[in-house]
Length: 83
Image (cartoon, rainbow, N blue to C red; front, side, top):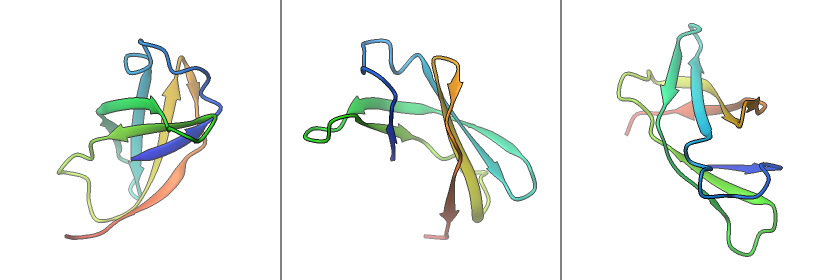
């Protein structure tokens, strides 16, 4: 789950208007299925975005960004570790 600010109002089309991508250290891009977009209760302006990480995403650091209505976020580095 990712958290974002300044996404605007979470409307009924928010899920359809949100995409996510991960880029690994080799520069390979992975489109991440977005499963949920919704406001965080009790946290004004904070939005939760749930994405599914693909099995082929290798262990290591990946840069993840989301795009909402054509506007891309900054990337966040996420460390992928073995279970």
